Amino acid sequence: MSSPEEAAYRLLTEYTNGFMVSQVLFAACELGVFDLLSEAPEPLGSAAVAAHLGTCPRGTQLLLDTCVSLKLLQVQTRGGEAVYRNTELSSTYLVRASPKCQGNMVLYLARTTYLCWGHLAQAVRDGKNQYRKAFGVPSDDLFTAIYRSEGERVLFMRGLQDVWSVSGGPVLEAFDLSAFRLICDVGGDFFTDPLPEADLYILARVLHDWSDERCSHLLTRIQRACRPGGGVLVIESLLDADGRGPLTTQLYSLNMLVQTEGRERTPAQYAALLAPAGFRAVQCRATGGLYDAILARR
Image (cartoon, rainbow, N blue to C red; front, side):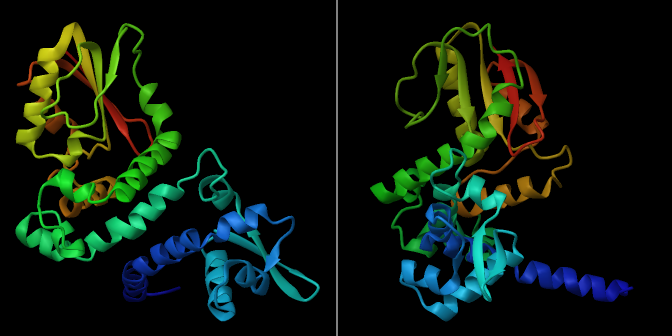
């Protein structure tokens, strides 16, 4: 049995090496490992994988074996050779042909979010997103930073669709929305563009991008456009009441620091934004998934 000191050191090592785990996943997705194994008629050896991908045989074998340890691939011996195939996890979430594939979001995290997180300490120092540091973006404006190229915009939007394909159902089932006949999913430049009249406005992963002041401005605009008796459905990852959990939501909140001007919030903090904008009877529902739901009526 290990001592508390040894257990603590193992935990520290796990945290220290966490970025390596992410990079293994990112590299395997970018190289097309999971798609290749999905399309192959039978499991492939590392040499065959390297030949198909045009990669270094030694590096390919190291990557494949690490994916086995991470339960992203399975390995078996056939004719004295190790051959690899996808696990259920990778088949479901990392193969592009799968309806639940998260590949676009994985690539966005690898190419954008990961680089911003390299400047987390600076984000804590100055309280600003880190696009300027990570990419030399000559503006702190959030829209300019996130959509700095058309390819980046498309990848980000497809990534959001990936996440929604898995997480959308539970949040839309959290409340009975049958009373709302005309529903508007709010997107685009919603701070300046006219908002259409509707019974229900959906803000899916929108408010967490913005400061309290900008959120209040947007909610007030929505309240003015909302039909009498209508409401707003806010879809976000909710922090616990004390703000110290769940861990995934805390990490998302730090991500808002390095990539946006916002943060994740507690139910009480969302209620404090909704009430002054004219929305009452705030109800919060935890879904057990990545995202939760808040319904408030005008």
